Amino acid sequence: RMGGYWYAGRLQVHAVDSVMEDQAQKFWDAYWVDQGITVTARTMTQILDRIKLGYLRNILPTSGRCLEVGAGSGRLSCWLAQGGYRTVCMDFSPNALKAAQLNYNSATVTGGFLAGDGFALPVQDQSLDVVLSTGLLEHFHDPTPIVREMVRVLKPGGLFYSDIVPNKFSLFRSLDWLGSLKRSVIGSRQSQEGYYERAFTSGQIRTLLREGGLTDITVFPAGVVPPYVPLLYRSERLRDIQVSWVEK
Image (cartoon, rainbow, N blue to C red; front, side, top):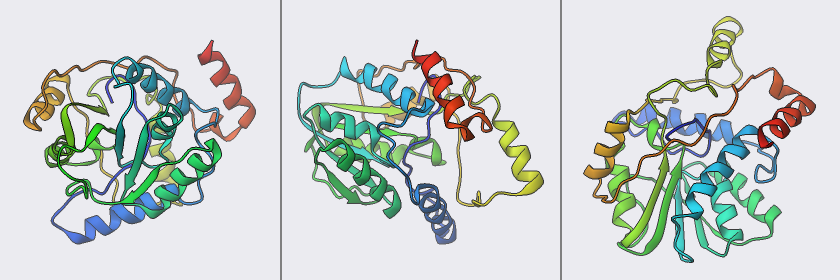
């Protein structure tokens, strides 16, 4: 994720301590529980995913097999499936895979749904045309092994795509401190245990991808969007107004 921040599916925080892994799984299962249809929802995160798709359209092969690692609700893969690609959504959270299936059913497209670990993809070497992740790599202290696994399953000349939290100011997340303040004062229904996130400089991203075995690397920003305001998002009407304004 280069120029903005998105929340999509995540895999576990890979740690030696199995307790941390359990906490991560519980966190993301709670995050994705009872999700509605997100592929057509008018939200800023949906707009951000459409921005990603706009970049991808220019570099995607005309057809092929795609795997999204840490797919969450699989919104991006669902759109690719609508474009005729053979897609598989993989996540370690059962609730995330349920959310992805809901989107696919809503869009009347078919795809695969795979429970798995990004550190050991259950996929043959050099078998895929596209491997992608959104909102995944920043949730690991060292995501290099995951990148290597994603590269392992790519065909020669295949496309790797990921969006990564940038180590720079983000207008979209500039008011995140309000949510942190609220949680510290009144608590939160969803525990933050198991949640980890780091930011990457452009140089660190390039190093990560090179060490993963990638070449012909391009790092690019993905636009500027207004701040995420939690109170505004409670109102469907206000949310719709903001989305309409940003679309224009």
